[in-house]
Amino acid sequence: MSEESAINGSVNNGRQLHLSCNCVKIVDVMEESKNVIELRDISVVFREKPVLEQVSMDIKTGSFLAIIGPNGSGKTTLLRVVLGLIPPSSGTVRVFGMPPGSLGEERHKLGYVPQLLGVDLKFPLTVEEAVLMGRYGRIGLGRRPGRRDREISITMMERVGIAHLRRRAISRLSGGQLQRVMLARALANEPELLLLDEPTNGVDQTTTFNLYEMLKELHNEKITILMVSHDVGVVASFVDGVACLNRRLVVHGKPSEVLRSEELEEMYGCEAVFFHHGRVPHMVVEDLR
Amino acid sequence: MDILQYTFMQRALMAGAIVGALCAIIGVYVVLKGMSFVGAGIAHASFGGVALGFLLGINPIITAVFFCIATAMGIGAISRKGDIKEDTAVGIFFSATMALGILFIGLSKGYNIDLFGYLFGSILAVTQFDLIVTTTVGIVVLLIIAVLYKEFMFISFDAETAAIVGIPVVTLYYLLLAIIALTIVVSIKVVGIILVSALIIIPAATAFQIAEDFRLMMVLSTIFGVISSIGGLFLSYAINTASGATIVLLATVIFFITAAISPRRRRKRYDLSDNVEEGPSCMCADRSADRETSLKEGTEHHEAAECSHKHPH
Image 1 (cartoon, chains in turn brown, cyan):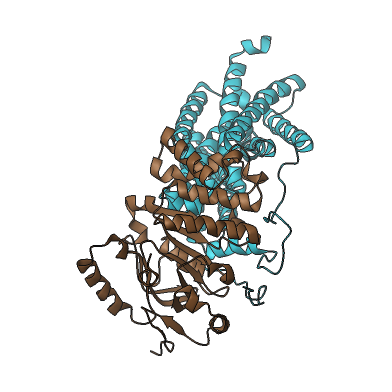
Image 2 (image 1 turned 120 degrees about the vertical axis):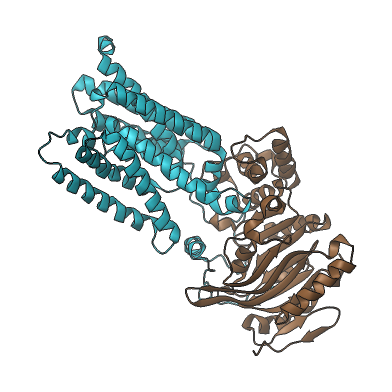
């Protein structure tokens, strides 16, 4: 992916950007320029408290984007909006060009890696059973996993290096191994878009690094990756785009520009608003409407 | 054994075996999905249904089926709305349906009511009709589980991801509630309204202590369920005790024996790291509990207070 083609973003000018995207679609025949995810003025209000405000963002096919932000900034909520688990209070979401609630067959292009801390470790499940679950959406209601499903599961287990653990109970895994199980499960769905919720939570530095290495590899195979994280440091060297979220989309651009350390600190306080769009990074004052 | 010559004993054993297996299989999902209290609530709701049957002069099992399914759907609908937690919803229906039952009993005064048998079980009084109903419902429930085995497993383990890959989580949740209700209704003749949830929970909980994979838990739970009901039935005959109570107590004894000898497998491990944690990271202690609430509420956990330090990079 060329660096600047990966992401398009907008803080306050979603509509205009949307129109320009439509034009691009007509003119540009290249698959790569298509948006996998389009968010337009997404607001989420929960119990009369705004969790997300006016977030607009395009994520292009093949990009590797990290959404970072302080805790409570709404980044997990944004991920859940993309996944169709939370309907936005206002605004539109398109995933593969469709509302995430009515994705139909397109659902099979999604791979989701949940937070490790939410995984029910006491559930009696072997690694193989857990990974095979990733196929369930494709297999269909009431059908048994076939040979192909098992083969793909094994391939994915091999790929993330847990094939030797396939008969082991998930309760007996280390954090790093469990994370690979969750990744293999997501990959078993043969996704085009991989979404990860705080994948570095609760695992050590080595495991984190290994995960990013694997994600980088997947990214090279044209899988679009969207990751929610507060692990700012390590993210930079792997992803090709960073969006900083603090209820609003504060900044969105290449990691080298977003993550210059002085700005980062400010961003985390979200005092300055830094916006990168296209080749030349430029500052934008926060939306004053 | 000469007691097997009696028709009532043959019926009792058949009903006991079917119900024991059925409850144990359903129980696996109930225990893993954390719905034990839902099971107890639906069981107690059947009291209202049975009483309604007495009031209307219909076979109480038939009214109980509808009553329990309605209650199960009500619990599901209220807890899914999200403002009220599942256990609170159960608590409401639990007492309301019992109250209705008492009201119905009062209204149908003058009739000689065999209510005791429904409350505490009367497996030796299982009729031909009861056996046919039990068998039919048993087959239906088992068929549903056989077909949707993997989906129910998925939504019990990780409903969120199941929804994302396109499993109809909500529909399946209601279907699960409905088959729990059906199972309970056909089981009340065997162990009684008050004890039926034990037959669902205990064998599955026993299997949970041993099994490390889902299939094994199913198999073990079924075995424990059938052993408890058949064994309890013989035991109650031998020592002349109430059959429902004997069945449940036998299951309980098996549970405690298993708990004592089971390998210490379920390491409580919230520390997920492979090595000892180095340097500051945001692995604050009560994250998992925090997260559960946040999942329900659809917001992020507010860890700002716990993790106010700047993230190193």
